[in-house]
Image (tube, rainbow, N blue to C red; front, side, top):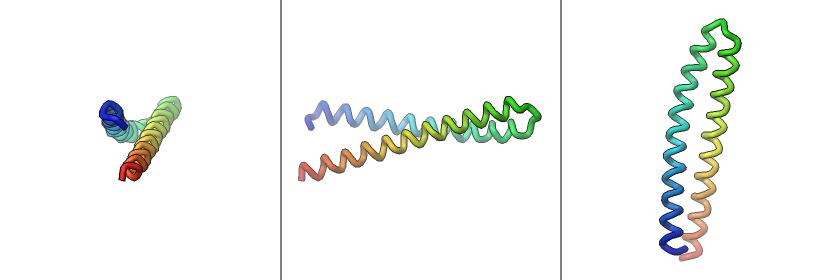
Length: 82
């Protein structure tokens, strides 16, 4: 792994981490929105708020898995160097 590869991997890891933080923040906001929607009589609002929450949960889970995959690849690379 040369320095360009390392710099690119570092940028990608930072971007994934930032996206994960944003997704978790948005999920917290949507959870509050879902709770508020449940207090209304609007079935459409219930459905859409629940769908938004599920999508953000999927995004956060995907990003966590991507981060774990990258960490494992980094650990394997370090072991090869040693």
